[in-house]
Image (cartoon, rainbow, N blue to C red; front, top):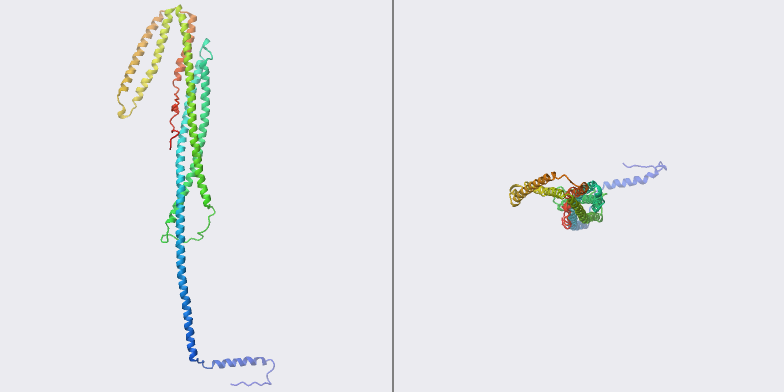
Length: 445
């Protein structure tokens, strides 16, 4: 329905809506018109455009597929190369750890062997110190016994001087061995400290080898493999390869140093034991020689006094000397008798079929019988001599007293001191007597 506007009725306020109204009418007219038709040329051109666009899209897709294939192959190759490189690095690491583990094992074995040797040397020193107690006691007892000499025989002679010197040497050797024992004990402590470090390092390397062996054996088809968050983190307590190498090398060097110190200390102990054993042996020989010379001199004086006494009472002196000789002969038989009895008793402990009545056994039995027969004959002779002395009642008092003084000195030196000194163990220069028993200095553990 047409709309008629009165131009006279439109005021200034509505005059602005006239252009918009015209546009609306034009739009409505287009909507009501039929769709436009294209020309054949336009139809062909539209199809050609679709063909070109499809070809372009297909070409870009083919290039992307080819690029993707190359990328996949490149990444696969890079990944395989990286994994192969990691395997090589793991294999090299395993070889390096195995090398240092073997070094540590070797040093540990050497150190353990050396420490065992030191323990043996420690025992030798302890035994040596213990073996010094009896000689020192015997020397002191000899000095005490010789204080019981009477009269003019209570003299500060060569024997007493050598005994005093022997006591000083024994005390000096005791002090030296005590200090050496302390050094050995301290070295054993240091060896055990180095051994602890080696064992701890070996334990860590064993765990590391186990872990790296597992890592080296993993592959893409292994079970229980997974991705972990923050797997590439750096542990706060991790160390550099240089620090790792320096740590193991320090343990090896420390162990080698302690082993070297142990070997030097072993050689020192051998020299000390050999030297002190030689000093003690030489001093013992000096004391024994002084005793022999002193006894010879004392016996000479006694014999001269006995000769003067014999001029006064020849028969009495002869019988007294005879009694003394017989008593000494009986006493001298005591040692061989004890040796023979001890040998027989000791040989009864031979095991099993070794308990054989061999030639040595038969000769020992005859020896015991011979000694018993000899002692019986000596005792019988002594009894007859003493019976003869009962009839002698006249003796020279002054000469008899001097003879008794000399006899007392001889008894102290010969029977008490020398007999007691026989129990001092011999200290042979070659094997150090009872101090031997440790490994040879050149022995290889």
